[in-house]
Image (tube, rainbow, N blue to C red; front, side):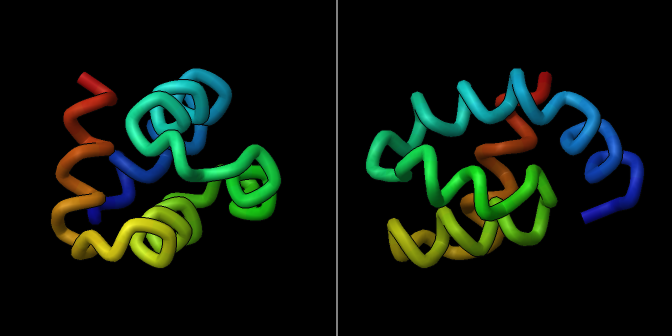
Amino acid sequence: MDDDTRMRFEGRWQEMRGRIKEAWGDLTDDELEKTEGKWDQVVGAVKRKTGESVDAVESRIRGMMD
């Protein structure tokens, strides 16, 4: 993931948090809170919870940012 995307994501964390919660409803607020809005931690949390690949998770999150 490029630095620009990470910075945009982390700068829009509150907005993205809601979108991620909608997309992956199995994630708890506590799990999302622990990520502190950091790209790698969010992707890892989704991957652990869902079993989706890192590439699939990153692609879906990038799509939410557009």
